[in-house]
Length: 427
Image 1 (cartoon, helix red, strand yellow):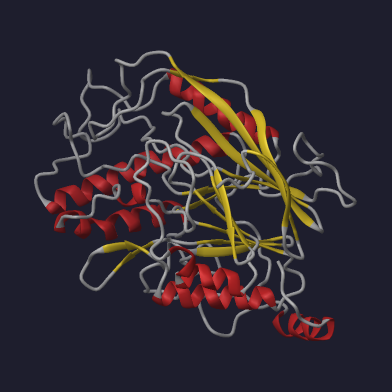
Image 2 (image 1 turned 90 degrees about the horizontal axis):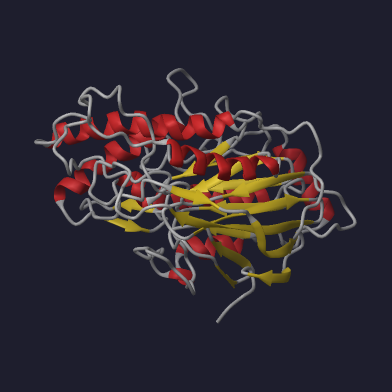
């Protein structure tokens, strides 16, 4: 982070805020709390050692974070116990996909991260469709039927997604992407009417408990606001991580890529208190859509946040000295910066030709970022993995060897340096 305040003022404010938790209210501070119950292996037992792309510095690495947007952007899971599945019908998981996803998660696990950030598009999510007429998740003849199908599919696919990471002892902190809202085809009244069901199904999988306290994360927008259960923040050592929900339903029901109103006010409070807390050395924000212009995309609808660098959201990041904003959506890698804030767009679905993810090594003085990339080879083009929609990935694929394809540093006092490979700034 990069603010200017005196040591005396910082110490006074830190004392004032010590022990407080930000729970969507005004009298809040930034305190550390245990990782959520669903986060296995949240604190590694050994200190990570530097890897290629993480050039050793004066201070050692305290822990490592992985960022992997768009993992998997495909509905993966065993649907044979779904109420509408009949013997002989296809499944949406198979041996090649298990091997491919295990290869990726094995590589992530070898980095020994404290946790994994996934900025949206965990799934395909078009669960209100039934391209083959199987009725796997029930009839979609009515709006109520489509809502039931969404909730049933969410339990299957989010459950499988969480179990995959848990088997590799990887704690996850996901964000909402457009595919978690049924994909960005919100031009019909029915699609807009289903958005609350999609949002609630995601929250029940990742941010809500059945018992009290209802919210897994202490820091979230005020209860009963639109993004209360889909935006959240948490502390891990000297790092504050903020997850935003970039999709806002306006009063007329239309959905726009914007961070406004109650979520923006909450974000401003969280970042203002972090800026006043000397123990917060770095702030990482992640959300599904890029804000600044990107130079590359692959098979993407290229969603971007409305108004870009002039948006209230980006101006808020600049005002409070956020270090980096991590985004996905483009299925390609590009970097940009504006007003002292770095934007790194990365991540990809396994259905495309290359998969990438980012590691962030945290030390006392800097974040050391390293981009890992692996080629994807398709074994067949004519056979496809079943999805409720007609848009289906190859049924067989293979993940090649991962290599470091880019690196950079972000200092605690502001400024990026030592940009290499795919993390260099490009016109």
